[in-house]
Structures are given as C-alpha cells and as structure tokens.
Image 1 (cartoon, rainbow, N blue to C red):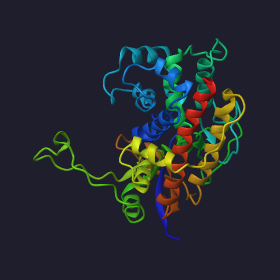
Image 2: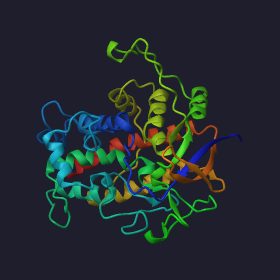
Image 3: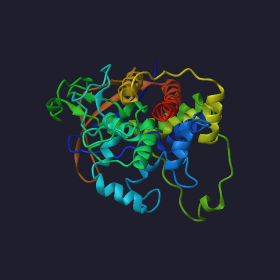
Image 4: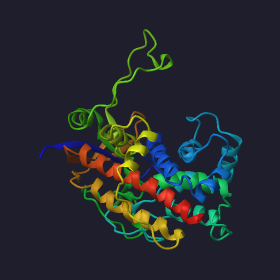
Length: 359
C-alpha cells in the first residue's frame, strides 16, 4: 500500500498547547445535536434558565475556546472574570493518556488533577448541586459549569484530546508508565499530535479523490479578495492535531452533505445512529467517554509508523528532534468515518448527561 509521509517535530521545550478540538463547526455540531435531543424535556428548561437571550447549546459550544484569546472578538466581562479566576483554564481541555492504553485512571502518566476528565466531573457535580471545595475546587458557577461542560463534551470525544503519542529516540511509539519517564531525552511527548506535522498538500490532493467536494457557494462581498492582493501561499504542513480538529470535520460534513452544524445535526439524528449508552452515576461518565476516545485514538494511529530520529531547525534557529511518519494513503476515509461517529457520540453524550442531571 502507498503511504503518505508526515514529519514529526517533537521538542521538550514546549510545555503548553493551544488546541481547539473539532474547531468551531465540530463543536457547534455537538451542541446542535444536543439542542435537538433535549427539546421538550426538563433539561431544556433548566438549560434555558442558565443561558442568555439568544443563546443555545450550539452557540455557547465554543465559549471555552473563545476565552483563550481575541479571535472570537473582545473578551466579555464574563470571560475576563473566568480567565482571571482560572489562569490554567487551557489545560482543562485535554488529557495525555498514552493512546495504547485502554483506560483512563486517575494519576496515571499523562493525566492531571485539572485535565478534561476531572474538569468534566466538576461541571457535572456543580450542575447536580453537589459542588463543594472538594468536588468543585475551581468554584464554577452553574452557568460556567454549563458553558464548560458543553464545550468539553466535544473535546473529550476528539481522540487526540485523550490519547497521546509518545516517541523514543528510535522512532518507536512507547508507553510511559510514570510521568517522570516523559523526559524529552528517552521519551518525547508529541503534545497530543500538535508536534506531528502532516504534509498538507499531499493530503489535500488525496482527499480530493476520496472525499466528495464541498458545495460551491458564493462568498459575501466582505470576504472577496481585495484587488491587487497576492493570494496566500498554500499551507504546506498541518499539525496532526489540527487535522483532527478541523480538516476531518470538513470531510465529515462533505460526506454527509451538510452545509452547517444544524443541518448536520438534523441529518444524523434522522438517521437514528447507534450510540454508546451512558449508565450509572453521571459523575462517572467522563471516565467512560475518555475510554471510548482512547479506542478511537488507537484507530487514529493505525498504520502510522515512525522512522529514525532526525532534526529540523526553525526560522528562529531552534533545533527540533524530528521523525518521519507514514500513514495509509486512504487515511481521509477511515479518519472521517471515525470523526463522524465521535461528533454524534459527543452530541448524544451531552444531551444524555443534561437529561440525567435534570430529570
């Protein structure tokens, strides 16, 4: 089988990431599914009581990403207050369990006290009215808990937000047993795939053959190119994490034939999809959600192999350890199929937990 080549840039110099799982469309799709599924329930009324006029789960689904910067517009007073009270809020969005593992366990390598599983538990406890200094150490308000839960319900089903790749100097994927083993000397952290750089030009060319084209729509005048402005150079590489955040969502929408998150929600709900049921106390559900994403993270890395260690030098002169990866040349097909399943599962999970909290 032919392979696509990836370049992996792994460096221990990085200590944080700014990942936006699923991008705006993916998160809004999760919220839109839940909006439709809770209609007519007590949960719908309780959600409306916490939302501002004109808001919906779809519309608030990107709030927790928007607080990371100003790309959604200036931060509101509510956002500014949240950021001030939660200076480490960016780490609430993910965990870094080795993708080879079957389960998320508290305090295992790659987990943290403020990671996505623990933060989801805090949000659920708060909405259940059980939040105290132990179960809600960040002192989330019910509205904040809903805003964050709505977003993280999407993040946790993005497989690279749960299952992380670790590589040794020989290019083999390894499974650190303890946090101390991730030393950037013998074991390197790929930061959820943010340091795995995909050849975007090759992937785009192959996806054009495998994935239906998006509908051609006229762009508003405001988006039209300014006369005399040179076209932007094509992006040559894309982080593996970014591929799973945005590129694959584009493929999902194209394969389903959806032009918007709301249309995607309508189409998939009408198809009566098979989804994994949630059972037991809702406070435990985030563990099951993480385990399910770990299974998909294994699929995301299926057929991916690393070569020998190499090095790259950035424009600023920083030297990076690099590995060449190969992925199957049909990768857009299975990855978009998995992403479709995950987006649907995320929407159904969100609706289910809200209904369980507010029966």
